[in-house]
Image (cartoon, rainbow, N blue to C red; front, side, top):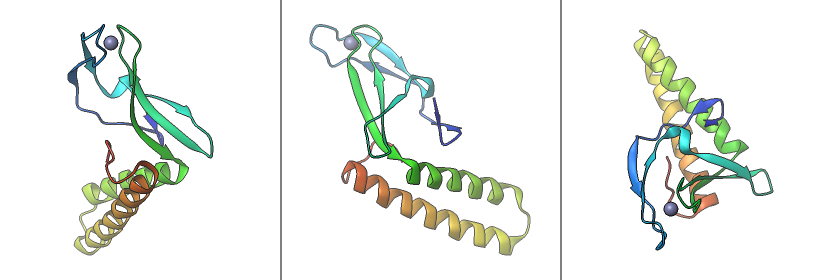
Length: 117
Ligand SMILES: [Zn+2]
């Protein structure tokens, strides 16, 4: 599952399906997340129980959020690689701005509680 050219990082975990007739365990990991367009440039991310195919919505994203995600990856990478302390500080400031903006947009799209950061 690639979002904004990057894989979503979801810690591998075991989930139990909520469906009354299922209640089976399945493994949830980055590759489990699927997406589909729901109009207005918005994509719904979700995963599916492999036993009963019940869908579990994760979060909604759009192009702007994907761009911010790419920006965050970019600045994180720059911070990790640069040795210049002034540049590091500048990158860190931009990283924090991008994170705050992404959080704001995720909340706007998903409501105050968003499953993914
Ligand atoms: Zn199930």
